Length: 149
Length: 420
Image 1 (cartoon, rainbow over the protein chains, first blue to last red):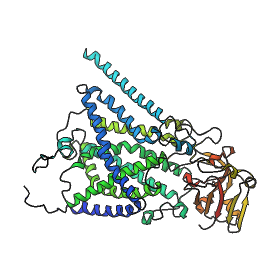
Image 2 (image 1 turned 60 degrees about the vertical axis):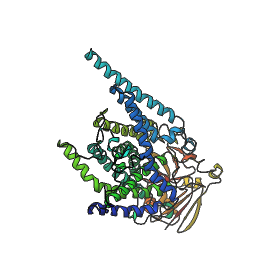
Image 3 (image 1 turned 120 degrees about the horizontal axis):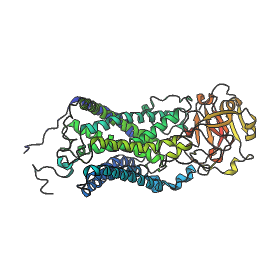
Image 4 (image 1 turned 30 degrees about the vertical axis):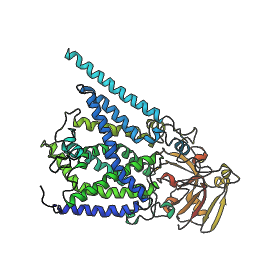
């Protein structure tokens, strides 16, 4: 049992100097970054890290763990689901504003291009990814069968 | 709750070393991703600074969205006009590479997430400062990627104007990035060299799982997935820097797919005439006049007057800050330097360009004397053999080699030559 609060350890000097130097630059730019709607900008900056670490990452990690649990004992096809799902999810994450249609009106008005079809194309790519993955799985299984028999 | 708060109890949940089971985590996996990001983010930062310089912010307040930049503009230089595809290349690389690095960044963050939950929260003053620095690093990286990716999709939900947010955000992030590289890169390189010589990984309790679960994919397989994600994003985006069939390969990205409309004006448009608030009545032969002001006074020219001047050709692309660009288009019109000479500026002079646009940040812009002096810098009246379409800036627009798209002002109403 600790008998008293441990005295703070300073740590080694090189990292300390590097960090103080870095903070000076961050502060110089940060003051300028926050020169505006600073509560919202701070929220976006810190919130981006928190939402990623405490929402997005746990969500996809839990989905992956669920997949591994469901396919227990049939590890051969875990990756044939995991890979196309991850790639499709990645495209959805990056192009969410266009795929969801939330910027459709502005996009069409600004660019004179059609904003339709992003969701359909994403679904088609997703279908193709799972399709290719399924074919590869079938080929693998087919190749293994004769040897096993 | 009572149990876990008893002194001497092992930490539970994500704070427990047993919580993190993936056998993929370890110094090799993190080092590979870290080295890729070191190279990639350096290129993103440099091309970003280049793009900032391309706007010539020091030339005139109308070009400067960040007047308080202070020493952060230390490197600014007068943006050249050669090679004419310069901005097309640097900004295409900036945006396309940024998209390609998304899966690498996500994988890197995944690989180090157990460190977020280390106990005690700080072992020393330095360690506490390092963790604050990591918040700036992770928050900064995500802030930059998110604002950039939203901006190219015209989803302006971020809190303020894109230019200052992305520019100052980049410097905050880069400050933390420099410290992270100084503190971690030596170990990452040492580790990769050691692995290549077959010495095995440096033991690192915080990265590798204490009790790893059974592997369902190899580390090489996981890196393959990350690389595959990068390739997929690049392959479905890079086409937006080219015309014709290549653009059709950019199936999910803005300005990918087909060209707007048909005929000689069927190439990408940044803002349509309607969106920019151009009233057709103001652009007719009778109504529209170009006002040119300079040393010797003011001249007002109709479109017919301009067509009566020497006409010149220039094959130049349009390249947007959003990362898309067109191939060279065949522009035809009056040289900017001929218009300068018309009002007494036989030597090169800066010019302040104003549009008919009633709204939009870039309804006015300044060009440098060097840009005006280039023989390919035109006040274009036609493109690809036909009159400009309304969306491409009819009655007249500026086109300057290597300049960012928005500096090529459309629907020009007034040119003011001389000191800005």
